[in-house]
Amino acid sequence: MAQNPDELRKLGQRLDEAQQRRAVRPQGPPPTQLGIAGRFSTELVAALVVGGGLGWGIDWLFGHFGIHTRPVFMIVCVVLGAAAGIRNVMRAAAEINAQLSPGADEEK
Amino acid sequence: MAMHPMEQFEVAPAMGMEHPLFHLFGYPIYFTNQSLLMVIVVAAASLFLSLAVKPGRLVPNKTQSLAEVSYEFVANMIHSATGEEGLKFFPFVFTLFVFVLCCNFFGMVPGSFTVTSQIAVTFSLACLVILIVIGTGFAKHGIGFFKLFVPHAPWYLLILLIPIEVISFLTRPISLSVRLFANMLAGHTMLAVFAGFVILLGGAGGALSALSILPMALIVAIMLLELLVAFLQAYVFAILTCIYLNEALHLHDQH
Image (tube, each protein chain N blue to C red):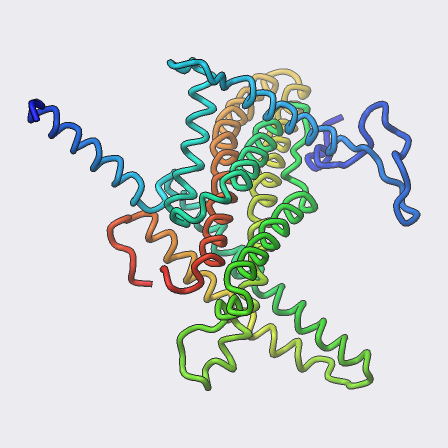
């Protein structure tokens, strides 16, 4: 009880700081322009490749059982892959936004 | 005369290890320059981290502070991305971060080999990450982990959205590995190309030889940039691991 109020206030301040450090969103280095560009392009291309590969695999599997669907699933899956790529880019953009402005996330 | 810029990425048996170690399914398995560098990286990192920290020391010296700062850095990263629960994965994420970071930095030593510029290495690491994420998801939520692929939408849209989410999830190991691999490959190729300019200009004789200082200065600048990229890519690899782990732990409820 005989504590110096200044000291207590300082302690409180330090506690607040420590708590804030725990609550803060990913800090770290801010992404560079080149980094952002690289991130978006890999997300887009990778989704297309995965979609195409998946469709090709499904076609191959059906062909194995004697059902000829050859280009159908590949076309469908490439289109779905393009959509997935755009979804990925949107998600990546949301992440980067949250990183750049720690206060203003939560809009999804 | 001038070296080919891609020559540095060639995987070959390490010096003195020209004989295959053993045969797997009829294929010879060599101890390559890549394996050698990985062994060096793991040995150096574990030696440094275990020698730097002495439990009895109250005031840390410089090496110990470095080890402690890296610990704090990774712990903060995991905590901010996944919350309290993610700290279980600290050993995994810390190992991954230190391994990728040291591989990138050892690759910056002239004449050495950049392990992370091989898609085989980065893709294996990314697959390990995704398998752990999937394992965590199933361990925590059981069959409910599949809810990760079901966004909030009316049912007629789900027919379209679920395949999109599945493809989007399958993209992760590829984008994770390609990003690290492409960054390291591009940086080191650029360095080698400019190094080739130095050799060509220097060998041209006369006034042209004096010009070789220009690409040399550029190499120094790119080298500094590459050091930044080496750290940044290790960081990105680790933080994305945390983000994926977070999704597996908390599905949709926290975003």
